[in-house]
Length: 81
Picture 1 (cartoon, helix red, strand yellow):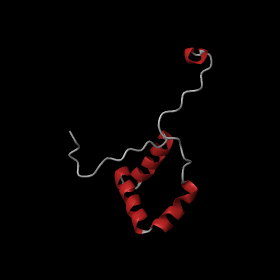
Picture 2 (tube, rainbow, N blue to C red):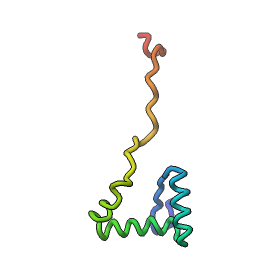
Picture 3 (tube, rainbow, N blue to C red):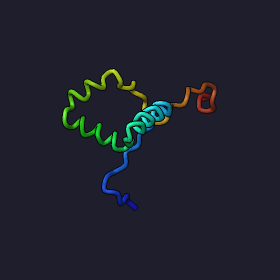
């Protein structure tokens, strides 16, 4: 059964300490995380070059996607041919 929500979900996994600090900062200003993400999307669409330039120093390093690769195993049954 498909989602009955109007807008599709967005799943992100920021580091726990960063999420806690950001949530604390937003809470102190009586703002919500979800509204903050929507505001960031709106700012990006309105002024993409300016907004992305502002984020340059904060951009995280790329992480590999998917499951980590298994380490090469030597001496397995498949290697005995």
